[in-house]
Image: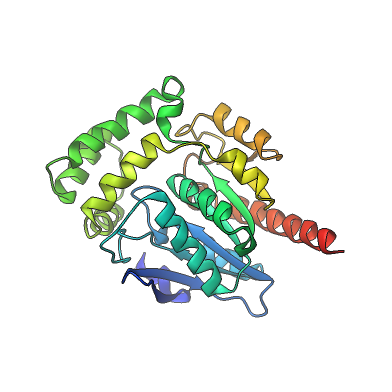
Length: 285
């Protein structure tokens, strides 16, 4: 599986506080624009290793990063959502803003705040299997999600990342190829324990900023797998209405459409980027 990284270029952006943000980029030449992809909780930039080359083949320079404290992005904090948003703005500016921001799950919470903070840095925002607020805003709709995350939150308390991950995987009991299971474990346990604890808290309790996002004027899209239920689909549909858009449902996928149905995800994203570019051109005219 590691041969898949051959067409991706690694790089690092150092922030003023000493944080090193690790990135992977698939270059397009010529390029129609730049895409920045942001992972969810327990994820990392490699969640997009299939999507980045496919977007590049369609003419989009595509980059994914590890959020601070995750995998190869080394940081001593802080890890709050506003700081994560500042990182996204800095990366967008570094890549040549405005960029098309694609944010998966937990990454959507920081991405919304990044767009609100600096709308001119972003050409569009696509929220993939994400939501308007933390899970506790609608606990009755997602009992399985709440159960799994609060279990993991408890496992993190007073235990190492190794111990917490092993408890999580044993509790969820998901069958997986041993090589993949090992890779996911190893990239998680090299991260920051403090970041993981903070991310869980925000994933549960983050406030709703969708109205401010809609007012920012950046074209937004909502996308989820047809069997995704991490955030309830009704919640995601309602968020789409508030953002003035229609949800895009990716067939044959659950919570990771960029891995489970890459072709359909890339095709949908290309339409989103094109539509956003047309809207921007119309405004300028």
